[in-house]
Length: 250
Image 1 (cartoon, one colour):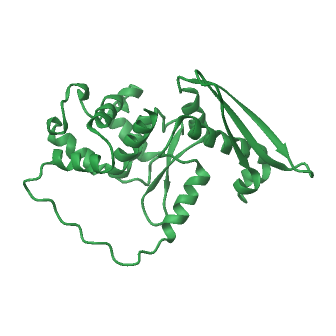
Image 2 (cartoon, rainbow, N blue to C red):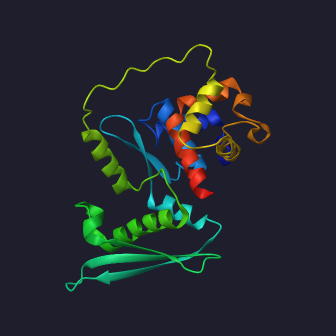
Image 3 (cartoon, rainbow, N blue to C red):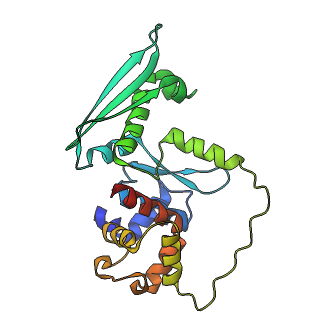
């Protein structure tokens, strides 16, 4: 990220820890940075920020400006239109977004309904049509271009509320340490392939994000430097989110 923003890495780390990612630990910070890099989002400009979960952990939340940036950066994006439908009393009923995509015979249309989206918050109470349009923009961008692994603020709250109320039926199984003969590269390969991804997906991630130096010249999992493999394993949540985004975009 520092290379992409042309700033000193240590200063950027200190800035992120002191501002937009204050409550994230090092592993969560790494995951958020990997997601931001995968989508070209800028946390300093509040494109993406960390939403703390009640039970611990972080949810990556993208602002409406970030969603708009994600949409207009798509090379095949060819414009978006919004259409509102009101109820008999003049209050908003629905908003439909029509996303035009180059070289496709039919646009993508997504409709969001006010009664399903509204929250009892000041923005929704004071600016109902703008908030409904923003929600429709997010969902239309996701549907049109397969954007995944990130949430808008309302969705982030839903994720937090669901995960914080789940009670496990029984204690989770104890983790068994990997044998000393298993290399970090082998662990990384097992993690990536078990989730349905290939070395090509990892190589593309490493090239685009800069997290794997000279990624395009690496021939396979075994050739990944040990320190890099260990770092990716520590940030496995963000890594898998990034790989999901890359696979979905192919």
